[in-house]
Image (cartoon, rainbow, N blue to C red):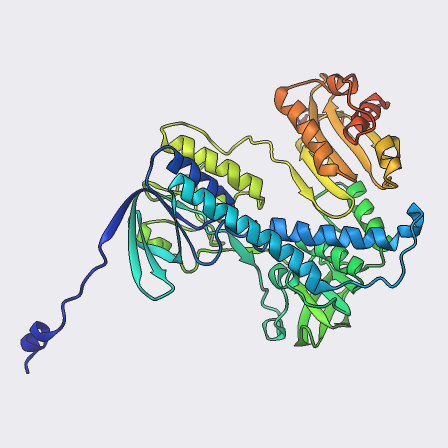
Amino acid sequence: MNAKEVLSSAKPQTRTKSENFDVVILGGGTGSTIAAWTFAGEGKKVAVVDRKYIGGSCPNIACLPSKNVIHSAKVASYIGRSREFGITVDNVRVEMTAVRGRKRRMVTSLNDLYREVYKKTGAEFILGAGKFAGPRTIEVTLADATKRELRGTNVIISTGTHAAMEAIPGLREAQPMTHIEALELEAVPAHLIVLGGGYVGLELSQAMRRFGSRVTLIERSERLLPREDEDVSDAILALFQAEGIDLISRAEAQRVAGRSGEGVEITLKQNGAERTVAGTHLLVATGRVPNTAEIAAEEGGVELTESGFVKVNERLETTAPGVWAIGEVAGSPLFTHVSMDDSRVVRENIAGGKRVTTGRMIPFCLFTDPEFARVGLSEREARAQGVAYRLFKAPMEAVLRARTLSETRGFLKALVGAEDDRILGFTVVGTGGGEIMSAVQVAMIAGLPYKALRDAIIAHPTLAEGLSPLFSSEPSMQNQRTRSAGQK
């Protein structure tokens, strides 16, 4: 048989028929889910593709499950302090399977809710592995290995990130936990080693300590939360020390031996010398990596940055016409609420608007107990920008509601313009910090002067009432030399 006969006898290659949609969303995170429901509610034909989770990471393996477990740890903390409240509790034990069960029930209820909303809005959720097969075209491989080809008038990339695994000898072989596995533990670790003092590392270190684990936290920086003001770092450090968490700072992991869950050793380099830390479990929380390696971005004409994030402009447009990106994969701040706002930016721009991501007021909250929350400028940022400000600061003890709760650790502080009464930034380390911050953020959005909060009639006794003593305190002038003055 010659070559011509071979070609003529071969089975013809059939191409999957394209299905046309108004919007195809690759990745089912919170921002993309809300975008899908909104677009579908407007009558558009919408498809959302995700490899594993309906609703993405937040309601399944990240934000909400972690806060669920952290609250269980809060209850454990209260039980440990029960005598302080006049209650005696004996024979206390933590059953991690029950903690996990409570978390799983919440996740299941959220999944059911998401399915119901998808059904009501008419948006289609597709469980499968998606990648670009051409301009504005996504090929989806389903669980049964069949494929679908989805072509969108607009395509939105929202594939998120995953936990980084640094190239430390022996680390992968040790099979360390990420936050996903830590939230699925069946038993309290005897000695948990946490590599990385970011949000995940800090929140889970405290939670596991409260469940009864010995915890060693390894941080490469000189202090916790090195990008924040020193009083914030000092407050979190004091909190962790009081709860018996061992902190090793200025330390770099050199190699790892053993296996997490059975016994693991980490060799560290600290101040030029080596030391070894041994424990039963290892949690890695050293950052995030964008989920772009398997989406064949180049097939869709989508460029990536050197770090692997999707390259976007301030309108969240990628380098490919009709293709957008939102959330962490687009290099946005790693918060679900930012992903949600990204979805608003894209929705408005698809409709012909000119909304941008620059200049946004982005709040954040670290859910340690007590919480650390901030919106607007920190003192560190104000100094770096040469911004003069008046500093208002008050201890949480000044908040009467905090006294009723026996939760007086921490402080509130605000930066107010040196020559006007605008609130430039607000920071709180204290119980209910995120809720207090939100009240200040609304005032900042409305452009209210700080005196409006100082003089407001706020219900007593509430945590937000603490804003009155804060803004009634004597301010101190800070950073009076502006940047232009410093350049003269």
